[in-house]
Image 1 (cartoon, rainbow, N blue to C red):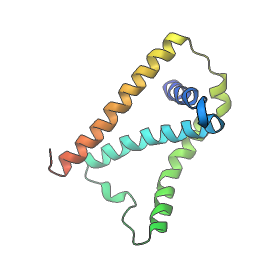
Image 2 (cartoon, rainbow, N blue to C red):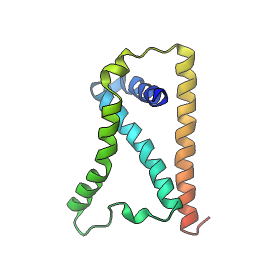
Image 3 (tube, rainbow, N blue to C red):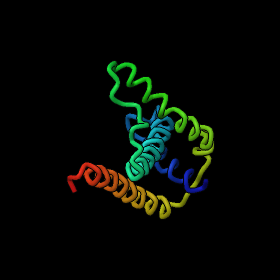
Image 4 (cartoon, rainbow, N blue to C red):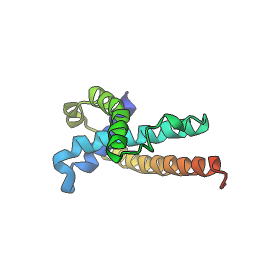
Length: 126
């Protein structure tokens, strides 16, 4: 749990400056959800179960509604586990934040690269 809070704090700290500072908490939770779903899709690709992802409906609106209902539970779970007040109260030294940011960027790059490689492998293009 401490690791999740630290990652959320890194995102929150990043989004607290610039044009998204008004919605830093929302942006942080959505970034956490994106990372979760990247890993979920990796697992689904490995076990050949990507058909449970709600896509390909005839109506674009129904596709978006189904996808939103698919994504909503994890977003709500993250909001329940990590409160904005908890993120505001966290304090880390600069060296830990610097290392955390570097490792988070590396982690995101590796995760996205692995997802793309899995997709290419399953399609037979790798």
